Image 1 (cartoon, rainbow, N blue to C red):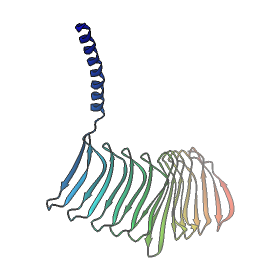
Image 2: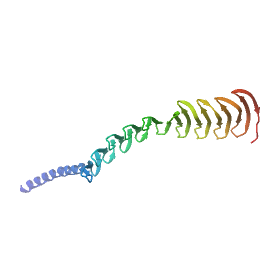
Image 3: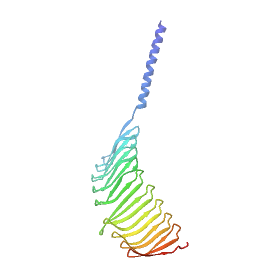
Image 4: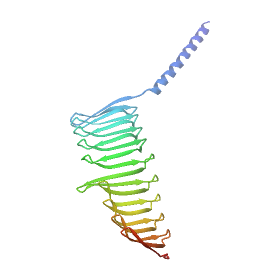
Length: 273
């Protein structure tokens, strides 16, 4: 009888022991080690503060200048940049705000000058440039506007420069394959300066000049293979002189004569190359 009782007691003890062991193992596997980190400048002021989770930065980290002013805030998720990162100048003005998602730019990126004037606004989605980006100079004037395709390639860009004669604007567009499609210059919103267009293969299509809104100077057109297609001298927006035409093989075909935009005649050439 004693043997039977001892056997039952031993069996019950073993059954109780196994669940406890499994519970202990589960606790060990899910345990997290959190460590508070604080660093100081030589003058005793706080320099950095944050948490480590299992040895990796986690949550909000804060930085201070030696003088005591806040320098930056960064958000982490188990070692990855995740959330809003902010930085300040020594004078307390905001320097930058950048949004992250698992180490990738995601959301709005903003920068400011020391004076507090906005410097740049960007947008990202999972690390890829999106939408419209805008840049300003320290006077608050826009100096660049850039638009992007969904894949992050540039779609268009407008650059501004400011002179005593007015605002000079250079506008550019790109094909979705990355090759430039168009570039034109304007002064005070009137075409003035270079005007160029390209084919999608990167070959120049049109090259001409504008002056105060009117085409002025040598106008050149090209075939897609790069050979000349047509050349004509322009004056105050009007054709003047010889308009020469070539085929894709580079053979001259004919010459049209214009005077003050008035067509005079056509001389056929058919030059052998």
